[in-house]
Image 1 (cartoon, protein in one colour):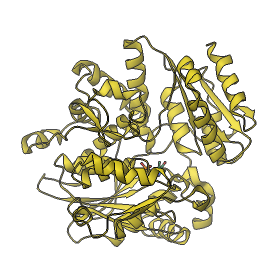
Image 2 (cartoon, protein in one colour; image 1 turned 180 degrees about the vertical axis):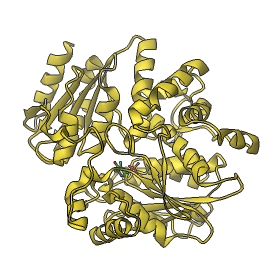
Image 3 (cartoon, protein in one colour; image 1 turned 90 degrees about the vertical axis):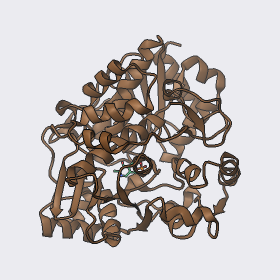
Image 4 (cartoon, protein in one colour; image 1 turned 30 degrees about the vertical axis):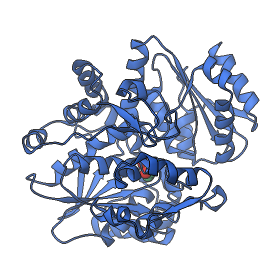
Length: 470
Ligand SMILES: *Cc1c(COP(=O)(O)O)cnc(C)c1O
């Protein structure tokens, strides 16, 4: 399996070559040269596999330059009950016949990002050890991504993590999750500023090519291909859990931000998984809903991004969306390059009226959006009717999923976080505190380890250099 750039300007690479990288040299995203097709016999055999076994079978097709035995061991080490608190890894909760929640938030940070990030941590360590390299991960987070990366990389050989977050602006639970880590390779930097300031610092540091090379600065952001690949697995697992035979079709409802999660669903469908529909749900930040309804992709300036009660979906542009558009336009990289030259300049493009946009239906996509009031109503209704507490992001997905529900087609709503992470909105909706999963009860009273700094890229660089000794 080789990887090419959505913009056509990269010599085909192997999985291991793109694992530690970010954007392709031409600014595009790495995509598989073609998608493996899963035949009926293979699909039937996969139904019986454990999560770790299934992960190996799927990932083996995408990372064929990792020896089979090594990849098998990495999958077995990642998808365990010890890490995901349940034998099933991604159990299904059935609300009523034909309506299910696929639990993806049983990992260490109680959000679905752990599903991919835990594997990525092990893949990183493996690849670095093989090539005797070290890497220093520098990132900015407003919540889920940063903590998921830290829990995946804590204690790993060859990696340090320097994670910037806006001082005092994350929820108390999210802050405690990150700052209570005492591992020597994890560095939390609380920046006196907002999330955009943190991102600007990361950009400034990366623009210093000499510093970046000397410190071997890397990233684990949402465009990382291995993260998307690892997420394909739970679409297959979820499908098997709610069907009896491989003739049945199901629909998935996906709370979406950077289009990473649903991009994996798209790839699962391209591989031949019988997915009738992929229902894309946004919150008030409806960049993606606007595209799927109208053909217009209009990136918003960050001043126009609303702060909502499903904050992990508060995005101005969807960084993985280019991967889907590449397929939608028949893998015409020249066209993708033209479209994104407008996007990258802060502009927009419109595919309305083109044969490409007419294809959206053939790719199974439909969409919708939800508001704070919708989230509250959905959380209340699910709690009242089924006795199940869901978080705000999952509520966005369920609300939009139900709007597109088809008779006779099971609807699987992806749970992307546990309610305990967004306690304030749960209290507003239900008038009570969310349940704490076992082991998390005193998280907020544990000692915290972090460094407060001004919005100053120079100070961050000095901090990194001091701790790496490079
Ligand atoms: C990251 C995140 C999302 C959005 O997922 P994408 O892959 O960026 O579309 C949704 N919900 C939660 C809780 C998240 O952390």
